[in-house]
Image (cartoon, rainbow, N blue to C red; front, side, top):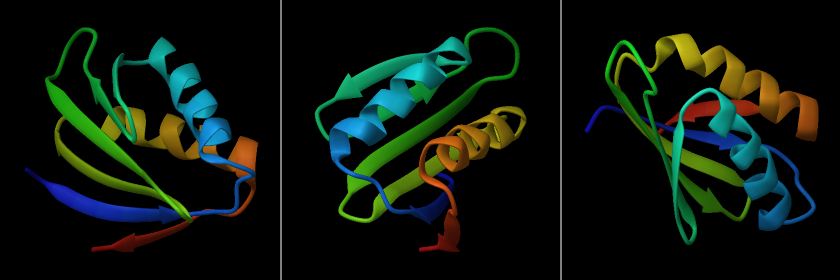
Length: 89
């Protein structure tokens, strides 16, 4: 696909992470698949933003024109969970 990164942060549960991701659906189309959430563009530039919920955060694989929504994604995570560490995997 594209860029693969691990977003590490502290959360109370995967349900709390899912709740934040569901809120992001105001920005992009949301497709929940168990421990995987996939975002795609609503309008404009095509992109795919896959999120796998893992023990200490999210592993994401992104492609296309996702960059405009990446800042909003990070802002949602930091608002909910505080510090976020991003690492290429």
